Length: 105
Length: 121
Image (cartoon, rainbow over all chains, first blue to last red; front, side, top):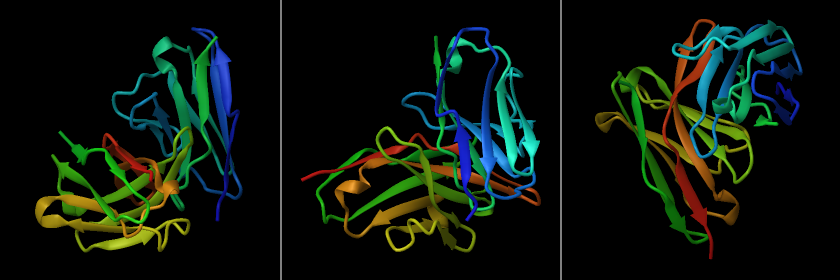
């Protein structure tokens, strides 16, 4: 089975900061990676699919990149409403990474 | 508008059975896979399994194979997740989600609101 290692598990940043989360696959998964946002008490929401494609309606401060085994999710300018836990998901077997909790400093 | 509406919260005792539901609307229910995702208290997301309501083809995560049963009734656009004998460790929030499948893409693009299952004696 392909394992996904997501890091960091949590981070604290100031409003306006650039935030980066990484996800590493245990083997080559091409661009078969999605990113989701889960706000407290809410269902997850798809933000990025196929590693770098922004889902319709998602603000452009969110972006994704990478292919093969190494992937990056970026918030270019952190906003208060971005407080959430972010998950990567590879779709060879639909498994999720462990999540990254993003807080405001 | 695509919507997935899940059944309400449940409180059960260990050993009891349970079936929760997820009703789809605003799209062709038989043309998309539906998945179930578990989230234990304070923990991350775990994919449990998926079903294609068009022909009831079902796939389970190895972690959940034999532990739950996923089914669907396409006549009422509803998918189900059921347990025959609940354990305290089944206490969790359960989400259904529509799986968009393409030649080079698989993604959960719409999610239900979640069903909280509490198992306690």
